[in-house]
Amino acid sequence: YMVIASSYLLPNGSSEEKTGGGSGTDDTLDQRYSMCFWVKKSKVGRPNEVYGLTPREVMFDKPGLTFAQRHGFDGDSGDDLRLDEVFQEGELLVFKGTANRLAQLQKTPGITLATKEIEKLSFARSKERDDDKLSKRRHRRIVEAVIDVNSDLVGKSIREVSFRQAYNAVIVARRPGIASGSRARNATEEEGGKPHSGSRTKSVEASSGTGSGGRCGNVCLSFSACSCNTSWGRVRFLPGDSLLLVAPPSFVKLHSSSRRFALVSEVSNSKPSRVDTGKDLMRAYATWLMLAGIIVVSAYDDSRLLEACVVTVCLQIYMKIMTLEEAWSAVKGGTLLTIASSFSLGTAIQSSGLADIIADDISYVAKPFGNIGLLAVVYFVTSFLSILVSNTAVVVFLFDPVAKAAQKADMDLLPFVFILMIGSSAAYATPISYQTNLMVFSPGGYTFNDYLRFGGPLQVVSWMSTVLVTWLIFLQ
Image 1: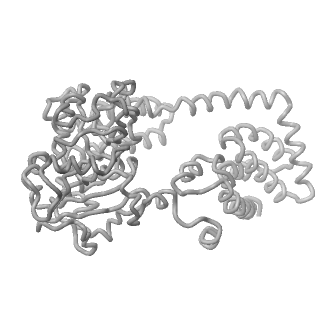
Image 2: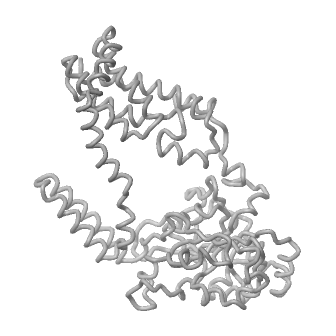
Image 3: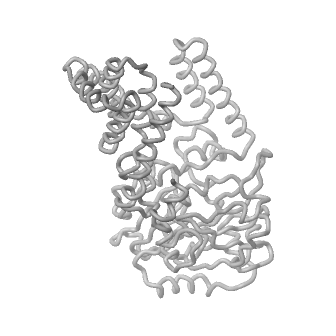
C-alpha cells in the first residue's frame, strides 16, 4: 500500500525543498546559512563517511541541506563539485542549509569545521588542561543568535568587539538580516576588494590558523555573502544578522536576556560527535561491554538490574562518555509520571466497575462475529482512541476491560496483548496521534488532510492485516 499509494496520495517535495532545500539551485538558498568544513582522515583507522568516497556515494544533498562548493588544491572556483572524484584530505567543502541540518552535518565522521578558532575557546566546566581538545569537545554546542536592531554591536566589526574573547564564542556561519546588499558590498571593499579567482589570500590562512587553506581556491571575503569565515575581522554587524556560533552551553543562559541579541537558542542535539581518536574508540568498546553486562545481569539475576544500571551510568560519567547533565536530561519526568499514574488509573478503572461495563460492550458488539470479531473490535477501539490520546494512556485504559472480555470469551490473553500493542501504536490518521507523525509534519510539508487521505486507509490496512495474522498465529 505504501509503495503504490504514496505517489498518488502524498504531495511531491517537502517544505524544506520548497524553501531551497535539497539539491535545488533556487536563490532562496541564500536565506540559509553557509558553513565550511575540511575533509579529514580518521586517526583510528575506522571507516570514514567522507574521505576516500565520491559525492555521489556520500549523498550530502537532502531536504534542508545542499552541497554548494568544493575547493580543491588547484585554485579552482569551487563550483565544480566533481561528483565522481573521491574526497581528499584537506579539501574545503561549502554547505548551505538550516541550522539543524548543519548542526547534524558537523557530526559526520571525516569532516571538521574549517576554523581553528574553536580550539581557543575557554570551557569553564572542563577540569582538564586548556589544550585538552577532548574535554572541550564535550561541552561544545551550536548556538543560534540574532543581532537586535538596537544592539550596540550594530555597525561594529568583529575585530573591534573582539568577539571570541568577549563572548567566548566563534562565529561559524551567518545569514544576513535586514541589511541591504550595498552595505555588504561595502564590507567587501573594506577587506581589500572583490572576490577574485586564484589562490586564497593570506588573510584566509591567518584566520583559519593553517597554511593549508591557501590551496583551496577562491573564497569570497564579504561577510554577508561569504561561504566561510575566511576574513571576517573587519566585517560589521548589521541589524537582524543571524549567527551560528560554537559556544559552551552556558552561552544561552548568559546572553538570552541581553539587549545585544534579539534571540539566543541552542540548536537541538548539536553536541559534536567523538569518533576521531583512540580514546573515542575505547569509549565505544567500553559502552558495548557495559550494555552486554546489563543484558547478562538481566538474564541471570534481574533483582540486581537496578544496581547494574546505576554502576553503568557512573562508569560512563567517569569515563567522560557522557556528562552528568546529559544523564539527568535523559530522565524524562513526563514518562515517569505517566507510568506512576497508570497504576492508580488502572486500579480506579477496576474498582469503579468501568472495566466490566466496557468489557460487556465489547463482547456484545463482537459476539455475532466470533473470536476473530472480538480481536477486530478490540483493535478498532484501541486504534481509534490512540488517534485522540497517547498510546500509553490507551493501553492503561483498555488493558483491564480487554482482559475481562477475553476471560468472558474463554480466550487466552496473549493475542489481545498483541492487538493492544500494535493497535495503540498504529495511528496514522492525524499528525498528533503519534510522536513520529508530528516529527515529519513540518519537514515533509504535509497538511492535516494528507494524514487523513494517506494515513486513514493505511490504518485500515494495518487493522485487517494485524487481526488476520493474530488470528492465524494464536487461534488456529
